[in-house]
Length: 240
Length: 240
Image 1 (tube, rainbow over the protein chains, first blue to last red):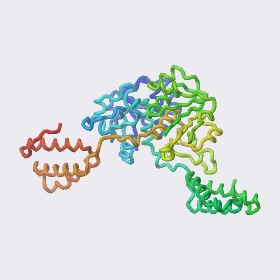
Image 2 (cartoon, rainbow over the protein chains, first blue to last red):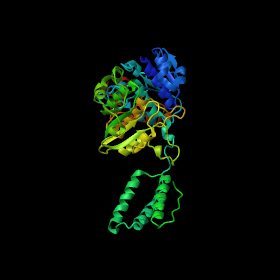
Image 3 (cartoon, one colour):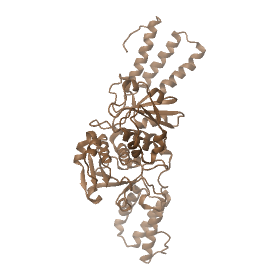
Image 4 (tube, chains in turn orange, blue):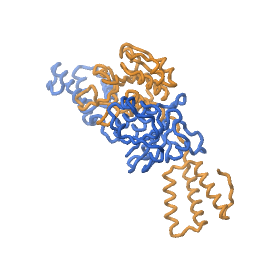
């Protein structure tokens, strides 16, 4: 998905820099500024290692020029529509709904973010295909501009396709650990009448912990080492 | 879920203010600062309408004091573990995994965020039950502190339980619209051999649009008005 982040008349330089940074953090690059304040040293300072995004940012005089060639234009608002009869802000999508709607689609999706104080004007929201609203607390719903961008780009980033975390241990692998624990309880002379209950507790604790294969291996290594120490096992020290 | 946001030795006043704001945006209130820089006018200016969160922020000398009475301590890092053999940062959870793990649990979940430049120290990560990592782009993975807080709190907020958007139209309601469109095509003398294909196209377009009940009603109102104009319908004008 090709996401274009468009800030409409941003007033605060630091916000522009912070947005450039988060654009790069989530692997995007296209930033467009409609009538921004000057983007000077403050913006570059906050952009940190995203100077390139800021330097390449397209400056436009109008939203129409900013959204040119977009397949989808999504406008953001912190003001939710209350009535289904009010078409301007209704129905609105959550950032997650937006991802579901646009994921895998070819073409540019333009995300419009309004001014820090007044957001997008009604006539600007009318240009949008979709209205997006981040569900915040009613007591203080208005987010900082760069925070709103961060959350939208976080949702739209390709994070789901990245395999995170290591492979979990297989059922068989864990079962061998549980059998080993059972043997170990016998070996240390654990009271017979408490054994089943304790084994179940260990199974529950280790189950909740979602062990990796490597962790199972290390735990069994500890058991083997302990068995060696009490003179019952082979004491192979192949782990840790 | 009772979420405590803990910033460890934050250096930048604006970040502290921005974090106070996002804590309030997502309906949380507990902020704890471990050896912060002074939180003066800059922090209050960025906090905007979240002065109360900043004023109530607990200041502590040590992480141990900050996490007191927590049920779960989650440490954040932008540096992912690469090997399952490295326990400090492995396995790590995504913000979404963290939500799944802690949702509905009683007690305090403490979220630890490290310094702007060096993050959490290894010995600080060792105090954590869980390590959380936001999946960012490898080219520039390090997020602004307040952005990282925003994304974590966004994921942990109760947004799922809030009914957003209006009720979608029922199948029956939409079916009445499609029947009405079919009648309308007859009424306007639409070519018979193209009718089925066009009706299917309309069904697909309106299906993708996920119509609300109100929108179905208004579309049928338009059809009725058109029928009245061409002298075939009753022309009730009960919509729009």
